[in-house]
Length: 349
Image 1: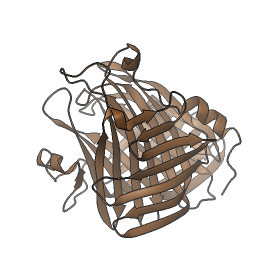
Image 2 (image 1 turned 30 degrees about the horizontal axis):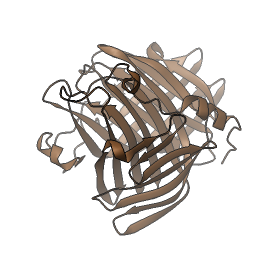
Image 3 (image 1 turned 60 degrees about the vertical axis):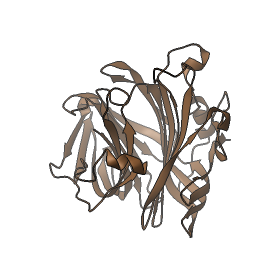
């Protein structure tokens, strides 16, 4: 394992802090914000999301906010849930990352994330320390067609140490690869947008290359609004590709599964099991100024988060897709190649 940069704690302090809604201070309502982690352990995929959003229903006051803990775990099979929290159960510090949702806690201290949660009605809990190995990258002001821009801070390579309990089984992790991002902005579910984001973490912990990318498009996915590919060598971001540098090809056939696990479970009544809109493969090519990278993702399973739209009576589906990835290319004259595991998120209708 390579040594992380000594600048990472300072860079995280400047980039990764909880913004909160401007409505708390008399500004515009409609703010959404979430801090997302993916932990890829042996025989375990764990996705944890601490989120805050303004309640934009007509009968709610401008300052009201909904906080949720969203957890998906795959350990043999899928399990997970969404816990919501009342205002008196929420505590968020005014600086940095220091969040308490009931008994659940997320802190950033001295450049290291401390994560603890226990779902109320499902037997899933964890206590983890996540140490970043790469410097964060910022992608501010990502445009939307009908609203203010989104903002993204990504730290795609960490190592997690601690314990995760799923049912009666406890998995002990030591320097297990993990991913983190932090997103915030003003939008409503059901607006005219969709996104895809993913990362590639190599199986070989000594391999220095890490990749993350995101693409934002119209809801029909026929018009790209913004695309970005980020490549790290060791701890440092060494190359960024934008928009026209990038082409993405997806299979026209979709991943077929006998059933799809969904949270919250009641939303399965509004979103039928099959088919998914997860392609059987995604291939990405980015090239500019003599540098190039190729990425391929092959999915093996999907867990879904189903969200009621705020603009109509439909739903928005977040496909949290696990699978294998490969990257290869050449940056500044240095060729590279790596295989690994990924989580690929497809936002669909």
